[in-house]
Image 1: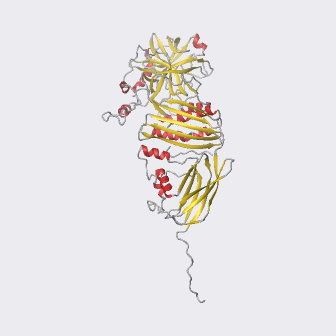
Image 2 (image 1 turned 90 degrees about the horizontal axis):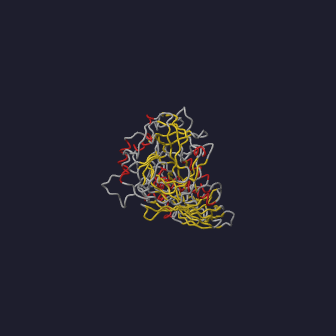
Image 3 (image 1 turned 45 degrees about the vertical axis):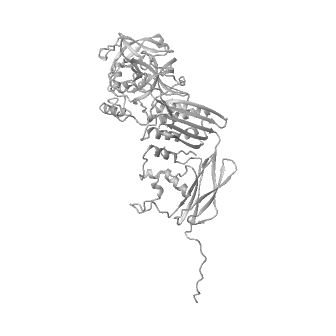
Length: 624
């Protein structure tokens, strides 16, 4: 049995690391390199130079390179330059490795570009360089820094940053110019390329790491070092060739991509990687110094293993040609906490992590992280029962918001129990009413291998005929999994305007649930954020026993349907929260919360006698 609530349904606390500098809005300003560079038109095969990267620790080393050829491209970047390495140190590690993305290449002391791509299962002393001329084109697009305005509202005379940037962005071409369609080859003359960065994931189960890798559109990931709570390094001084880690998650979980710093601008901006990270355009991903533990040789592709050390700034551009950002600007981030209890072992543990502020990816990413953490903390995956509580606090949530639900699965309880939280996170992050930064969230999870399920085995009503306005006692027989049955009695009230017959429906929460008909059919809409939270709380929980008294012949609020003349039930014009409140008050709905996932559905039909029974009046004899 797998049930999850799907009506209108992000978990994560927002931690403020710093505020955007005033210069962050000037994102389309020219990038002024702190040094000289070489243009592609001046490049010739056979030219020799050197590249800078980190092979171990944090020390930048140099190795020689030779220009093989300049390869024109139809898309973006406009050129790729084939290079050959000839270094004993590089050969010892198997050649150009994942993690060398962005390693700057100099010819005659001038920056030509940075290592960006290589090929799988090839001789890894060959690679492709993205020219600096292409890399700096990422600054044609505006940045979109995350801003947390002071309560209660921003100053009215200041136009929101996103509006002014939108005007500028509308005048710019699409990110890649000539973007490739699905299935179209980048260049028929070239074998498939692999970007020379490395995605690493630590602190999560393998199946979660694989899901996150696919979610990010990457071919593979590798284990890396755990970051822990990363400190902020203010006024950091970096040099080209240093190892950087772009962070999606950090803390007790790390999801990051390791690459290399290519160049620094005179205004504190930087460019790196020489290819996109995720290709999501204007972003806010923290960037940290990285420690390189070593380079692992591989027939497929060698790769660096790194650990983030200290956050030094923020990646604000994620484009086809490179990534870029600002040193000294520290973006706000979402933070999450999982409080996990193993009921079988009677142990509890807490995990904390931060997530880069990307509302369109955050819900799915956090749900996968929670799943991977549960796998690790529980030490297994499979059947079981879970009690999940999502507690949210933050801007716009005066009293906070929470929801608790229970789940049972005979297959994969960790994944099934977190589907609803993922849906809720999506709604909160993408709600159309207001930003709720800073946002704080806790997920409380209690897991057991035991099937904590309670079955509905019987419904007994003492009478088969009822009158309008009368109360009815309903006895329900319940049996916990492989345990002794128990009986509970509930009282329902027959509506005063009921006629014909009534149906008593006894069921588990989430089985044939009351629905958001008013929203689905277009009778109502959600008008504000508070109403959204109310409707997010309204769906049934799986550990609830639901008793409904549904009667025929009751008038509706609208009258007859305009098309077919059929009456429409009044609940079709009510939001779910309104429907539940009305029916609980009138006595046609009863909800009992239990410590079990309630399974089953039973019905009873009662006849409605609109008038009391009267003795027959005597009649005169007919004389027949």
